Image (cartoon, rainbow, N blue to C red; front, side, top):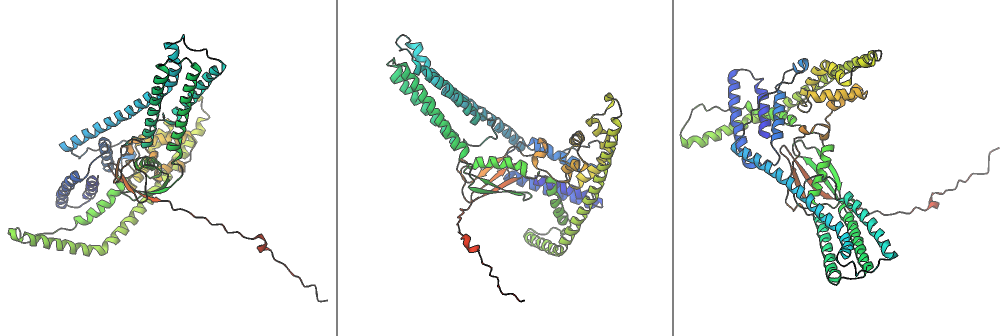
Length: 529
């Protein structure tokens, strides 16, 4: 992504350069630097997310960056062709990522299948304990009295309660796919399996082999199994739900590209479960990642470096003089950079001031255009109230009718703030129809475009990060510790997570005697007459 961002910055300024000769030199320099950076990235970066969606997202970004201002007048989308080439190594990596995603799906379904099989064994075991004596030796069983029949009702209701409790705790939709097993859940599954096997062994040795005639004792044996399963379910609630409620650690999450930071307080969780909680909060707390804003700073640096050129006046020399030429070139580059250093902050200041002025100007135009469009909508609604019910225009048609009046101002504002790849024409029209349906004000309609919202506010095709890679020096199944650091990496950026332990707070009580607040007011009885 760095190479593509740098390339977009170069192409942006090369389109505004003067002279065909300078443009040719910059294009050649761009091609060389892009090839070097791409070769360097292929050696050091491993892509862990499916690359098909980000490539489409970047293609749409570049396609919308080259659009002109006629988009708002014609309300037609102009798309561009992709200039990103794929090597054989990239194709192999893409196929490997697809195979990994298929493996993750198989792993998830395998876990669900094993859980269902274990649950069926647990629930059918008490029923089997009650049914097998009637099938194998029905003539030798003693009659079941009133107490025995009451135990039947107890077993039935306990199994129903256990069934509902297991469904509520374990059979919930999975929130994420973990790289390793959940230790506590695996421990509980092993405990239940060993517990049921031990009951089956005792049942086979003491009841099936001897063909016990005391059916009431067999029913009490099944009731004890159900009671033990209920206690194990209570243990599962404590380990899986209650243990993590009390916060012990404060996690600082920083996005590597723009430095956006959030803090979260978590309890005693493993690293992989803490990563899931962080990602769930990331999509609602962090503003959407905008690579176009990062490309602006890279293009500014590229423009400064493009003006630094070193010429070899003497021409190609001997091989033993190559080192001296390289040193002289480096010294010339350093001297030119030192001369530019004093004026670079002025250029940055004026560029940012000019950008802010353009944003305020286009924002004012957009606000006026939207207010006029909504005023027109209110007039249309007043006129339609006088018409017949069949002639009333629905909100979708009304949005399509007024959209061209604000499309040009909105497109210019989105291009200035570099949000054009986050909002498509179809999504804007849907949001406009939604605002008209719910009688929202122009300010409420513009809030989604004037301020950058969280990631969940935009469509799934704009997220650009749905598969993450957890990088940690410690085992991901180990618990959080003070000072532990791990990374959540996607194809565009990474989240750096630093763990700090919440300090122990010591409170002291200080008693204040209520009598210490009392005072006496003495008045002189003598008065002057």
